[in-house]
Length: 438
Image 1 (cartoon, rainbow, N blue to C red):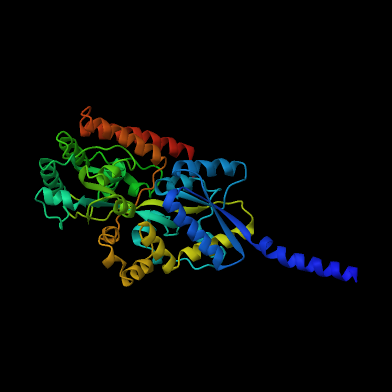
Image 2 (image 1 turned 90 degrees about the vertical axis):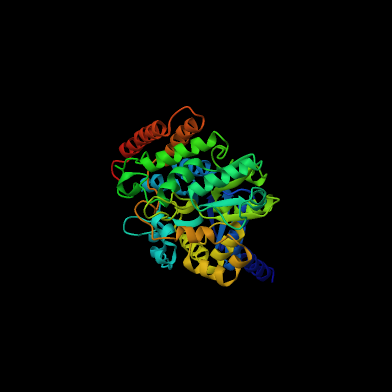
């Protein structure tokens, strides 16, 4: 009798404990704080609720650089996560770590999960695929620069509040009128290199570097010290003198100036849209990146920023089955569409864009489709599909060091860009020597 009761109790205990033990935990290290972090947590929670075999465990590790650095150190001690979020300009660095990464196309093939590059927008596929078109990482949060403007300041300056400036000459003319009407600055931009060198080059179909911006090999050399980029940076410096353009610093530091109503025009990430609407006390207008109208073929298309999800090797085999199922979950059009609509990041799949369109989101939210239209304006070229350059985080720092010299009046645009190219090429050669087998 007692033995039978104990046996029944043991069976009941196993029944209670087994489901919890059966869920394989999968660590996901990411770089998204605040509201974006909450939206990311929701994705994980929704996946966890959709099945009982796997449990995604997100963990915030700081900004992109801090997150990647943490993953590198963790790999050395064999405590790495299965998934890590990595910004787009670190793609070449991740590719160089061949033994550490598990390419997503291989993972999905090995786990028999559907994963088609053709489902993604071409500008997304091109950035994160190898020369054969195989996707190396999973597209997650993608953005591109767009133009924002203050409709109230436009009205005060006698400008049409329903018409965004389309070209750089139009930007200059509008900025001068905004200043004459009392605006603290005509226009400003965030992320100086990303917008005024990298995406500027792509939008005018100019190479940032040889060898298809590095996609063709590690022996690429920087090439952005060309006459058009020199002319553009020189024009910004000229406008800086009158505050028609006003340099606001690196990273996202320009955005608050627009939100406070200081600058009438702001060029920044499309992912800032929701935050700008929430924080600005004026009606916001939207437009595409400007271009120089005398450049044949312009505008081309802009490149993406943001990050993708990389899978790291040397985790227990059951985790990879869960990672593949999680990526399949994230690929669903309704999941992608909700992520796009709730965060402001691009819908990275065609189906998510079409679903968002049929749901009437773009009708209810003017300007939300501009980033997609701009990225898909034309098929990407070797100059506009992305950047595949080693140590590009450091190269971007060198570019912005030199841009600041120009905006302070310390150097000419030509001298500064020549030096940026020289400094950047030294970093490229160091990266090439450190990765002789790639």
